[in-house]
Length: 152
Image (cartoon, rainbow, N blue to C red; front, side, top):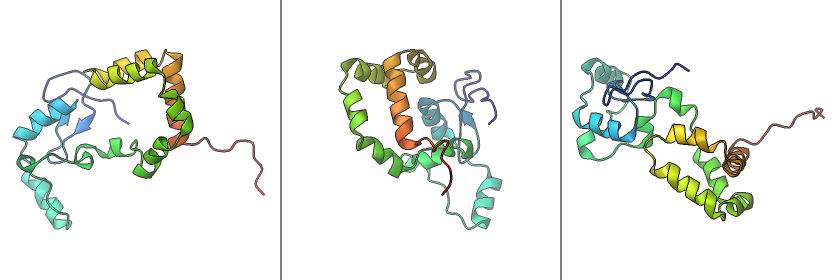
């Protein structure tokens, strides 16, 4: 995966992790996506390619919000967790027990409300409780493969 470049909207260095599905412009966050979306005009070449390939036109930003699929680039898509696996999180007793901890809930709220989520996540990964939460989530959506098991 290539390193992120500068955001075309706010200019933040090495922060543009997302690309506009219409024009390919790089941006770093939901606010920058919204700003870009207001001004975005797809390159005619890309629109013609989509039509030639039999694909439907992309949603018009003036007619409602984009879906998550419209915002994710192909690189981001490979990191996306399928909905059926996300539903497993809601069924986990172990995860439910962890979420009873008020300190963990406060950490999650802090991340949710933060502007710079990635640096805060790195900081919280030093917290044993948060690491336990992250490990629990990962073990549910990506169960470890059985090691040292002989095939039958």
